[in-house]
Image (cartoon, rainbow, N blue to C red; front, side):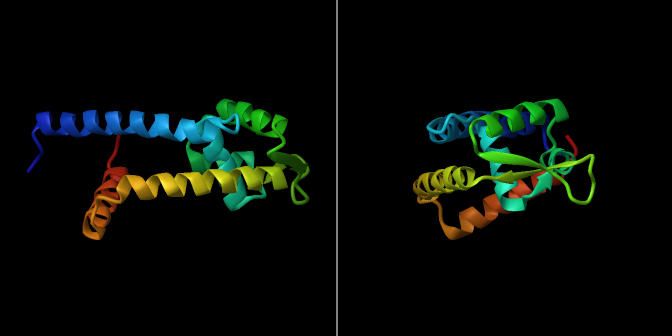
Length: 143
């Protein structure tokens, strides 16, 4: 049975409000390092998956190629990543985190961990599991 439009709108409205609050809090943490959240997400992917080429990163993050290029330039200028030629494909370059980039990523992760621990502390384990299931389901729906 389809959900009434009113309830669907309430979900979208509440997700927008939550996203806005999460964005503000995330920017407080990443801003200490001269980064916005999107730049931090790219750095995080490079730390987790590096060395990685930009084309693969575009696909993984579902981000515009031109936007990723700007982010890569910023991360490189801050000394957080390095760009090296691929040994497998001379036309491709690989992105890898520098020691400074890994340190910034680690410090942010510690701050995010402390913040999220306080934020979700009032929820029971069942509520957390249920929320994760619903979010996973929402991610599978066509936009």
